[in-house]
Image (cartoon, rainbow, N blue to C red):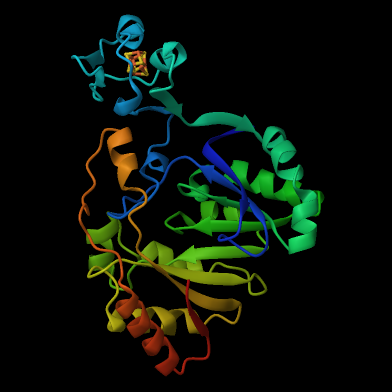
Length: 298
Ligand code: SF4
Ligand code: SF4
């Protein structure tokens, strides 16, 4: 069985406890306007182009079977590109580079298991994110099952926009679920991500009763960070006995340059990140809350 991934990051400290290896699955059913991994969204392999690295040798245009590379800048006409990877294979400076690769469970297990000692000493393990792992639920299920067989702790990071069966298969062997909640109002959720939130909220009830979950809210200035929405989110999360806390993740713009790389526009260009003063206001709001669940600004 193979899955399509677009990255592996080792020694991560931010997506689950301890030191972790992150596996990023390719493909996502949502289109969050602030997505910091836009290269994760399409399910198939695609080509990225870093124009500033191009030395204008023309090799890519010469091999492209679809005449998708044209002009003095050797830019890609995306509608023509079939993702054949011929341009990336001949580019001498990796200005054109494929995003995404097919891997087997055992290939990934070899990479994950290399850092077993770090996991043991730090309480870490493997975290599978994306993209959305549930789009490749059968593969993720087998990968996490193998991790458990090797006594490696497992974590899933999910937007939870998935059919019930896919979602349950994805989380079956997860020791911890990082569950994104982007907006409690379905119409607003749809305008921000392209999808309503009903399916997502229903999936929260499909977590196993003894399965730890951390609800995470990406805080986007002016889009989902009203105290009303935060209160509704915390109230929703507080009803689950298995919920460890709600984490608030302030917006950053680190993914912006990736949009150009894949030939797309970044809708939120120019949006300011939170100032120290705004973060302090958020911290004060958190301190004032009296819900039976921890709220943490990450
Ligand atoms: S991936 Fe293939 S079709 Fe797309 S630009 Fe490169 S050579 Fe052309
Ligand atoms: S092969 Fe690479 S360096 Fe040469 S023109 Fe194409 S993108 Fe530029």
